[in-house]
Length: 215
Image (cartoon, rainbow, N blue to C red; front, top):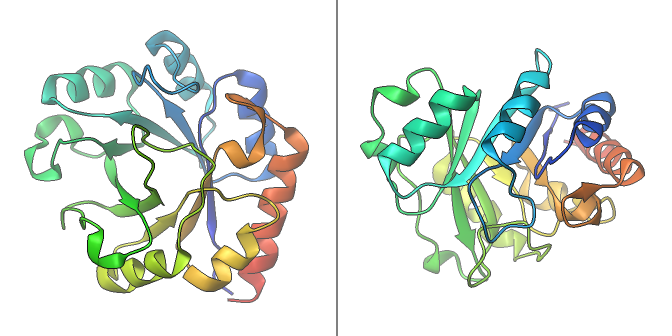
């Protein structure tokens, strides 16, 4: 059996952090400096949440990086385990500031694999999320999972993380189709934008565990 990992993204408060950890999440995503996102939190709040993330659970800084200065500022303040990169900043341009920090490159996906801009070969993992104009994720919109499966095959052995409209009700089918290294959920386990539903988080992780048994 190969266990599929789970990242719960868009954590905005301590209560949701504790629920996700207790339910068995492998990673927590903190959206910082993304004003258009309802899950964006301040640098101070992010620092508190990263510091509260326990050992063996990874804290992931999620932002839209357009300059090295922005990246360096956030990383020096938060010291995350992982950085999830969206925006125009190429992995090749990242300097000494990210030494020891793993990088997830987010890729926007629609219904055609040929339209997808594949990431730099220097990233540590690739996250495929649904392409929605004006948004960088967390939209609750699924995409064609066959495209993500094709990307997984193209980038192997680089791990693929599947995101985009995943819920407790569809994540098992998504895993069986794509066979990703990990799945990423945000809006699919929420009561409202930025506030998680404990029951949905637990149901999501249970569904992932059941799907993993069949791999």
